[in-house]
Length: 76
Image 1 (cartoon, rainbow, N blue to C red):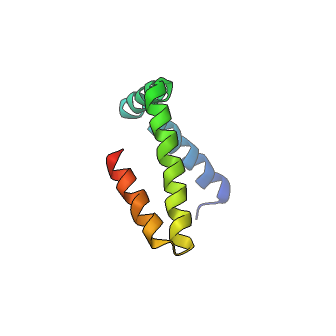
Image 2: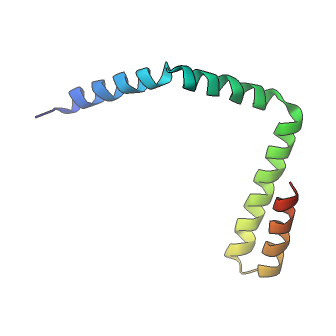
């Protein structure tokens, strides 16, 4: 049977192997480039803001406002 330390050590080992995959490194480089691009950052911030508003509209039953926010999302 495995003990807690064995499981945690194996999990760390697997996590390190995943972190060192070329695909993961490439993804991280692309992600860094995206976050450095001010235009994309601005659009992402606006999208996050409108997503939060859409969730709030939905939670408070404001269906018309929710539909309008959906129209905005399709334009972005």
